[in-house]
Length: 62
Image (spheres, helix red, strand yellow):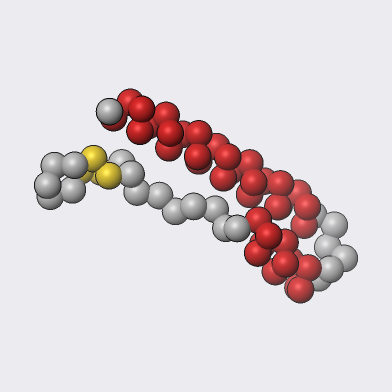
């Protein structure tokens, strides 16, 4: 969270990668890698948490 030169609060973040793109990249690298689904699941979880926290922060800042 930061304040820009106009005095507005700005949420700065980098979102997790797209789960489908991540799975494709892992499969192209090694389609027998056993932890691909775990990484994809983790990314989906992180996206969900980021979305929930962003909504909560937006509510607080209103």
